Amino acid sequence: MSTVITYAAFGGPDVLQVEQEDVPEPGPGQVVVANRAVGVNPADWKVLAGAFGERELPATLGFEAAGVVTAVGEGVESPEVGDEVIWHGDGAQREHAAVDAAHTVPKPAALTWAQAAVLPVAAASAFSALVQVDVGPQDTVLVHGASGGVGSAAVQIALALGAQVVGTASEANHDYLRGLGAQPVAYGDGLVEAVRGLGGVTAVVDAAGTAESVAATVALLDDVSRAVAVAHSDAAQEAGIAVKRDQKGALAEVVALAESGRLAAEIAERFPLTEAAAALALVQEGHTRGKVVLTV
Image: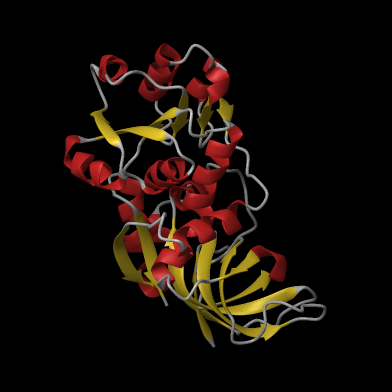
């Protein structure tokens, strides 16, 4: 048997249940992965709250994980049994998962399980956003919410692309952003003036999604086509700011950056899989620096 976290009704973290299920068999084109770490993201609690519409219940949260391949299905040539992989998909909060082989990439030996597991959602989203607005060495990028999972990845990836970076965060996270290589500014009153005082910006990645961050973006950019919102918000839509589109090959790109040492995830907290409810509650609070993971 294999541990799985399920929910039979929409609600808060308290509706999550620890259950047992049979270890799955791989279907055609699939592999079975024994997860070692599972990333926890804001999208998880939003799904649980019903924000993304109805789902067939009972269901399991989770969109990213890393582990070891234990079985392969018909037609799969790679990965092979015993390979360490990073994967993305649905229902990751479980001990064993049947995964489309096409949704896996090799896990570099240099990465811990936790660091590997959190790349598919936040880091790949950050990469996609930066590519969407064509960030390069000529740019100074403003990252709203720069100390969070997506934001901190966006800072590091933008720097790897040759850009300069300004990041918004609370004062408590300013030294952290300086350590990443960004120029920090405090969100709130005076943000626009502070950014202008640093010389202004040419592109914006908004990982905060607040009315305030959107207003600052509009004030700082002459052309909002060089801004991208990581997630949909009414304020961004009304301002004409595009939502991030997933870029093909984004996961492989961020894995390569992580392997080279140019991208490192801050792991804020680790919880056992059986404590998924506590992990989700922490993420839902919205004040975590970096990423939260479940260990298996």
